[in-house]
Image (cartoon, rainbow, N blue to C red; front, top):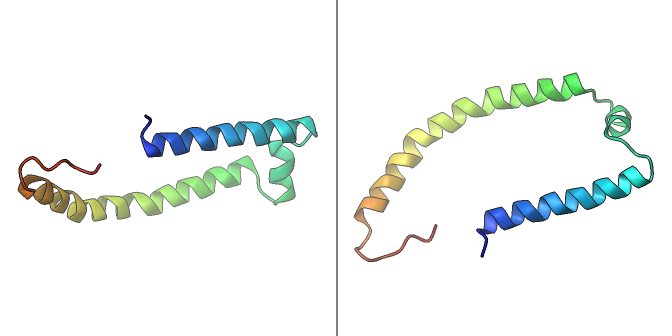
Length: 85
């Protein structure tokens, strides 16, 4: 079977395809929706860059703690015990 995360991603992609097809049938485009919400491609790109600029240092900082703790737990788990990943 597929990994649960991969299975969820496939479901989201299929649902998005179905909804996108229905919207296209009624003549609704992404540009129309963005205009309706007062957004532009440049503005969305700016929001994405600002979000990434904020998130990336926090991800790195958190990984300085999470990765070593996970590695220690992985090393010292009882022999023969499978990981639940």
